[in-house]
Length: 151
Image 1: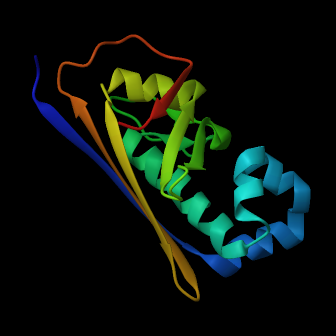
Image 2 (image 1 turned 90 degrees about the vertical axis):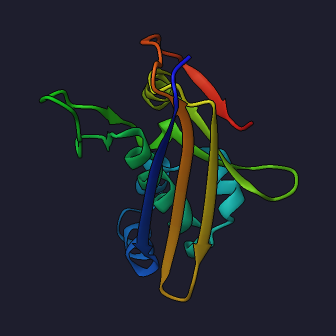
């Protein structure tokens, strides 16, 4: 069995930037970036939307991926996930966690992710998210269509 590998991503978002996007593009922006459950959980609070946006960016970084055309990769291979491939959900305790779908779930499987921790916070002007995942160095190459990233 391979050694544990830590995958980390962090992102900070200007809350006003998310508010401006909502004002400018409205429902189109919200439905392109957030899942229906995320919109329910945020309940229209711009700071909550910004924290979830930061979580999606931080998760993409931990995956070594970009989001829809803003892509990173190794040896010229472009890896990209969709905004809604990364979903922030709340446990019954209120603790945020991740549910990965589609390409994000496939990438997490490829990296051997078996547990993940998500932390969200916001202040007056900014929201921040940190994602730390534990994977294995000998991860397989099989993909997955959906995976709940909680252990």
